[in-house]
Image (cartoon, rainbow over all chains, first blue to last red; front, side, top):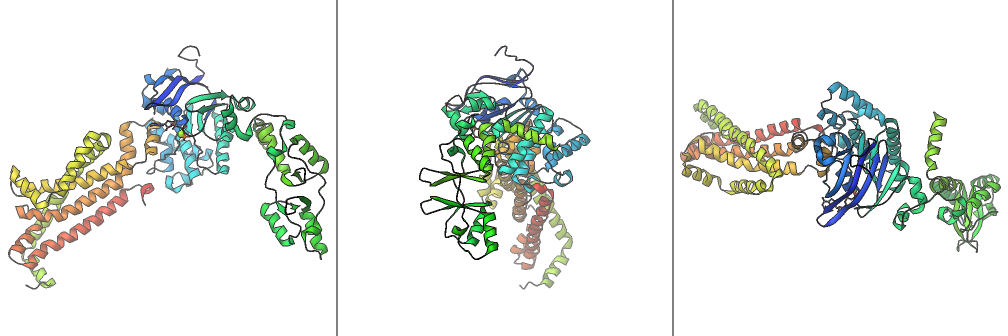
Length: 397
Length: 218
Ligand SMILES: Nc1ncnc2c1ncn2[C@@H]1O[C@H](COP(=O)(O)OP(=O)(O)OP(=O)(O)O)[C@@H](O)[C@H]1O
Ligand SMILES: [Mg+2]
């Protein structure tokens, strides 16, 4: 917190910045430094001041007190229009220009900056390809001819068009389905790595923050509650608010500390002894499982039916009820046991599923191999997910 | 007096030169001129109204008021305040009537531009002038154009009243025809005026559609 000028590697700096609307603080005494090439994510519940903070950086909102520096220059000493042309901005509501084509939307800032037409066209095509859009198809489309996800991509490209070193993004992947969202997150990560952009990114999705951020700023009622790298946030949440915000993802923990209860699937696919074969088959297919846990009316676990067993039984013919194909369950686990034991039991018994039962053998849930894998990624090594992903890429490439 | 296509045709043949002169006067002097003037005044006023409340309130109130004054009364007032009779008060009256639809549509069209679009424009570093000319006006264009169209159609009808104060146009035939109880003559003025209104609406509609960016077409 030295000189007000900051060092050259600090791109954005907020010093005790506050914004008051009427007599309520939207942002209060916020300090933040964003270094060159850093990906900082602002996160917090709705209305906590994320958008306001972002807009104060490009002066769409004037701060009430405090100072804001961009590349060492106090923003109030700069012409706001020129300042904004140097900063990419993706607004929360996308805001594409409906009367312009995709290409015209993207090239608008370069056009304002006087970049020659041929160069702009080249840039548009390059950007479209970057997010997997075939230029000849998408260049001439209008925003209303795009899906929500495609519009958001164009919104991001528009911010990248003039090649700004600093980009502000306000929930750019807000209204997307999980798959598209993930795809765009990956694209953004790649962009950031390849082009060394400095990004300030707003979200209220913790998974998104953990995935993308170099540093996360957790905000609450206009204040920064905690500013830490993701692993640090997971390991040492500053208070209950942060802990609650992290939810089930919290903490890098030893597998011995993670209880089966936390990770089990609580809606196992079950059948009853008197269930017919066709029904059983259909249920397995519908839920895409190859085992059915058989329970009685008080959900006491009676046995297990595997699709292999079922098929064999059908080939042999004659028998009709599920009870006849049932095999006894050899291993189960209690809710209070830890994940390490669960993993060991599954490995030793070569079991595909591990039923979780209480002391009266009533079925409470189930652990599958997939559950264990996602536990490792989400709970045990949240920061390791990145390494796994990179590893895959290396292996494939 | 019976009216048939034949008698109408005879009536026309008897004064075809005058017919074309009045028609031309009707279109050029009594419709195009005042509507173009009104467009030139109403669009900037409409834009300013979206920027400054102190302009918006009196301007819209004045335009609304103009619209509610009966047309003949307005003509009478204009003569009374010294514009005399003939073309001049007619053009002024028609101009005043055209203001409201164009003004109102300019105002509404610009106001209807989504907040988020303006914020995106501002956020990417467009100047207020660039936002107006590159974003707001193009998006508001179909609405403004619809206002001009409404004004033009109203004016074709209104212009027939100009004849009452010696303003010329097709109204001349109507007024004379009424005076002489000559239905053929009245219709020789009224039918082309009606056809002109419909044609103008259609042509302007086409122009509007052509000039509307594809992304804004419904
Ligand atoms: N122009 C304004 N006038 C008055 N109050 C405002 C204005 N803009 C924002 N606020 C208030 O400031 C607070 C912070 O708003 P902000 O938009 O920054 O929240 P946010 O964290 O981005 O929320 P969200 O996740 O819903 O987008 C809110 O209480 C909001 O009501
Ligand atoms: Mg917001």
